Image (tube, rainbow over all chains, first blue to last red; front, side):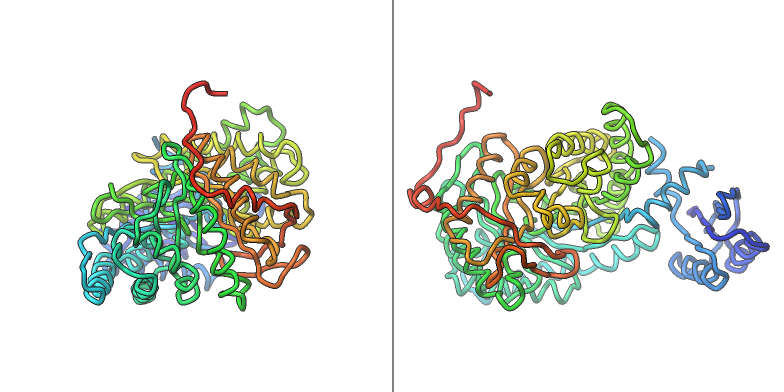
Length: 89
Length: 452
């Protein structure tokens, strides 16, 4: 199963390092990564493969989101199908 | 990989524009619970509901977590109770309402619908007894919703039932007077009631449905309002196109959740209801959409046209996004549940007459509006008869959910809290329609040719 992780917040040093370190900790394999800066906001999007993740989806998503809160950015982990459903016919 | 802008658009819709799934509703047939022993009937109903829906709330929580989209309500609809308990007295029906309440509370769902009867041509004994029990049932329960179908396009309008429902609503207002007559917020009077509607107060599990089924109602007025604001000054073709595109995306989320919920619960997937359902929260208003189209205030001239365009575009966009469409499908315009509608009613730009006109081109009908507590029952019946006529003649569903707030008048408010919101009490005509309502009998079904 693949998930999309979005990281949105004020641009600052170390955001990619933070998200990728959390992914590595849980065994989530980053397949693709992109980033964009909108005004002073930073938005990073990662597509990750969760097959190797040892904990359940809710625990992984909860840990990522908590890491975001601890560092002042908004991290969301969502199953890729919600994006596929909305944006692909 | 998915387009970055698309991903950010979805996240923005959920974070900032209140995109959510309004309800995942499980329909449950209770026909196999029928028994001539009332206590056995009660036990079987409780057991069937709690067994069928035991995982409903937990599966919805899992889906919220996995897809990152809030599912605001988890609900249950059941076979109209008047059929299941057809031999019961009114007291027996109140006991069944309490059984439904206990099942809903034990499961942790937000509402249970189906305390209902179909009486468009006349009432079977069970339907008549259920209708008489509604005020007491609404007093003694919190989560149970009641609906009565008083008319269809094929049968015409049962005016005896319309008359009685005006009185029943008035009695319910009195019995629940300590909470601004909240009982009336759980009663809806229908024409052409759908059998697969996931929305309350009118959800029932129709007799032609599978044993259990999952129906989903989507939401998203904030998303549509934001898209219209963003597209700015454009002509009506582009306006309609913008709404269609957004409605498609919203509905695809509903389709995904409906299919996934059905799979995880091991229950057939029924329909997605293509609806724009507002809440009293800021930025979640259907009236705001109309105002973003260029109306200074909802209710002013141009409102009906704006709503007609919106409703049609939502359906056109949504219909391609889901396998099966059903329920009410369209924009909802409840007064108390929509901040823009509340504000328009406060200014009296939105009058009861304009509200009625709006219901001719959109989903459902006169919904969640408050009127003075001293309104005669016959006037409530007159309001119902007018609205039901629109549905019957135009071959569509219409309904009335009116709250005659006991002890309050124009200029005052009723407050329900939560999704039910709050509403200013609207002005009605003082002139009587009692002699009309008291005639009794049925208004014949309308002719289906010679359309004009």
